[in-house]
Length: 329
Image (cartoon, rainbow, N blue to C red):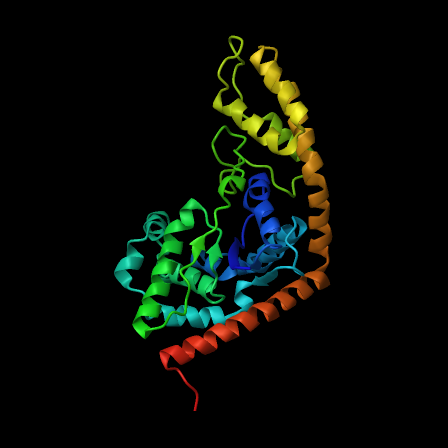
């Protein structure tokens, strides 16, 4: 059984793309590996979020992941800031991270362009904090998207550098966990290739039924096929992809045949898709509300998660201090 770690953003709401993409694999993965899932509130501080919203955002995201299937009795679920050992390892790893390599990361360059008035040290050393999150549990695998691959490679570099500098084989070189063919990519309703938080093109798991119907009815299609067996355009293909995730196979086949025969009515297609999405989302939405309102349960989950995570982190930090020569009298 391998140790797997995944960070969860502390802002934004889960959408269908998250649910049918990585999250369903997380739910499966937690029964096959020793999993740590944490909500990355330290990372969000690089953008100077409103302090009044930081904890409510963590509260909401935690409730959504639990409602969607992450089991705190099986996996370790914790808040990043509840584990001070991460900050200590971050400090120690920074002693072996060099300014030049951090300045060359693609994410730092992008942030410098986007937030010119807030180019803080946290942005520069973001890869070191990410490495600390991973190495604090000596994780063998980390689920990452394309935008995080460079950071994971830097984690591997920091692990090698630490091992070589101190002449040990202590930190593993964590491998990406990309789920292979099991990872489902849900497209956006705007005809783009990806459903995303910031794009405003997705169905949130917390959306009400009427909101879902309105969003789906506005989904991009086309003017209709011009001849039998015409190639499916991007917008319609995206709708069929979402339908493949939420509808029955015979429903999907019915509308594909209607498209091929030039008899498709996009209004009917969208109405069916909306109702099928609602069927999937409604029970999750109900669980989200129940969990959000159960503060005692959330307190229990986070306290239990912090305690479990601390056991792993304390062992790592004791060994790291010994390796680096940091000893108490």
